[in-house]
Image 1 (tube, helix red, strand yellow):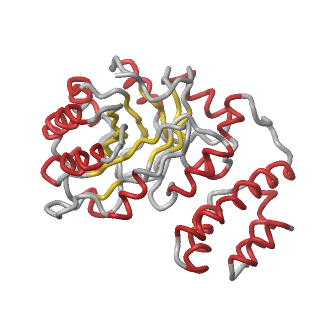
Image 2 (cartoon, rainbow, N blue to C red):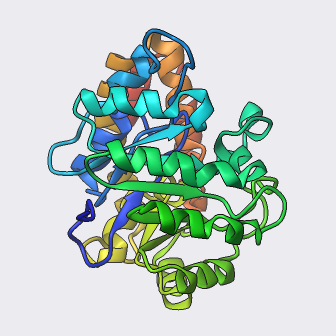
Length: 314
């Protein structure tokens, strides 16, 4: 199966629940052009007449022209993932990613997300069923285990045997959530153990981080998450097409242009100023550049979308 990217070093925008909605994907596609975009995970509704919720369905078919969209599903074979994927494919979805890493809520108490590590024997059968119906790439995004980081080696054969096209590894355990450091020494072992592209994810916040992870692991590419929220132009900096060390004013200008566009999408997608500003705040809190603190504090004072727009214009 052809891979869904053409770049020799694919840089992907990570799926981040509550953040990488169709508005943010469109704006990142326009401004920084990741090689691959991912939806937030599609919530499966077992036994429902339509296994994919209407809101998730809209997200799954909202493609940015010129950039492949990978739709992420979460669940297990007994919880309707195969039926949901069948519905998605019937409506034009080409690329599917299975979430084996979500560390939140019920995903760790049932066989979904990071909880799939509780029953590794169920992984291969589900992936084989998906492989039979997915017309484009089939991939997995995974943590390294629930609380044992070497648990992933129990499921690597299932990934290879089912014929997935690539694997995204966030080298933390489910129990870690986002604490501590991603263990890219483990990523290195996983790359060596598999004869398929492995994408490294976790703690890539700068060009130096990117270069170090690639040199250490031999990964086929990188997935950027929180680092790309803090600095959207990190994609270009890694590629050498954006300033490596931007001034504070350059960084402010980059963020202003992107966020101004994003507000238009947020107003269309979300209901009312309070929800728009809440979503905007959940994004801006990832920006930790010390020289932007005062500017960001001023933006956060906005009580209406019009006030936020005016603050950005200034």
